[in-house]
Image (cartoon, rainbow, N blue to C red; front, side):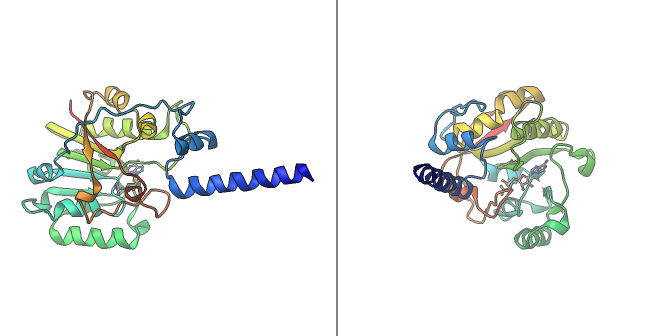
Amino acid sequence: MNHLLTRLWYIRFVSKLQGVLFVTYEFRGASLLEAVQQAIGRDAPTVEQKKLNKAPQKFDFAARARLGSALFVGEGNFSFALALARLKGVSPSSLLATAYKNEADLGDTAYDNAAKLLKLGAQVKTGVDATCLSKTIGQRRFRTIIFQLPNVASREVLYGQNPNHVLVTRFLKSGRSHLKSGGLVVISTVDSPFYEGAFKMDDAAKKAGFATPDIYTFNPKDYPAYSHLNTADEESAINEHTAFATFVFST
Ligand SMILES: C[S@@+](CC[C@H](N)C(=O)[O-])C[C@H]1O[C@@H](n2cnc3c(N)ncnc32)[C@H](O)[C@@H]1O
């Protein structure tokens, strides 16, 4: 009887825990232990945790968009590209907004936003893999290449590395050959030691031949029309987290 009660308590505890974890976090780490540690804020065993040395000021996305020649990759529903395309002084025809998904797999919001971008004169492309850009965008070069909140939605370790580190490293390597002279690659993420431990941005920059990135504060609420969606579900990391960072990579 005691044994059964203990088992029942354990099952309820684990399902409660999973309820909390699976509802609250998109990025759950490679194991339940990591996820628990992420949730309670202790050091995870396989993901090094590092606090960001972030400048208090924000990266000026608007000024960058006004310079023209900006490529957006990994746009979930095109709302960030659309928010910038609508800013005063931005020439939408100088923007190329892309999504990883193919056109047939886009949700309604993505479809509507893509149509709005096209109407403004921006270019839109689907099925664009940020890790091998030349396959879909040829040899085009840009002043700024932007990937907001990259996430592979996978916990599978690749070459002994977190898959999100692999994604950003490959993206930086690919993006580098699509930058105009003096161009920048810009990536925003959730600002938490766990995320930084997963992305390892400094290492990714080094591997891809960039200088150590400058890090700025990012506040998604500065772009009210930006309605980020997680890769794996319909939740929004913008609502789930309070601190974000923008990494700016130059050569
Ligand atoms: C967390 S969502 C963020 C979406 C969007 N950038 C935003 O901020 O709302 C992560 C995005 O990364 C995209 N992604 C994952 N792997 C990718 C790849 N290899 N190339 C381009 N995008 C990728 C997913 O399709 C998804 O849209």
